[in-house]
Length: 155
Image (cartoon, rainbow, N blue to C red):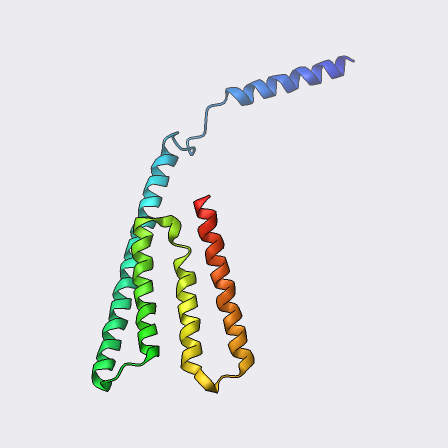
């Protein structure tokens, strides 16, 4: 029994000594995590803005290239108009990203729907009927997903 009491008193001393120890010199000050998070968040926001600006510039470059192509060909087809809608939706997605971040998730779905519709129009009568059905089902699934996202956001 005396061994047990000696062992338990030694354990108590070790736990008291551990709790009284000073923090290591490598540990950080209490407010340093907030400062690191602030700077990390600032860096990520800067990268985000630079990349979004690059996306808009590249989209405007694509628009300029397409307008030049229309001008040289002296003709505009339905597929060309749908391509311009794709460009417009990309620019709108960036604009919505800055005004209301909750709506950002719906715009890529709209872009996908427009892209699939453009694909169906470009392939036209040469496409197999089952492929048209698959692409129409894809548009339906995307439209349902957009409705679900919009409804969940309002609730």
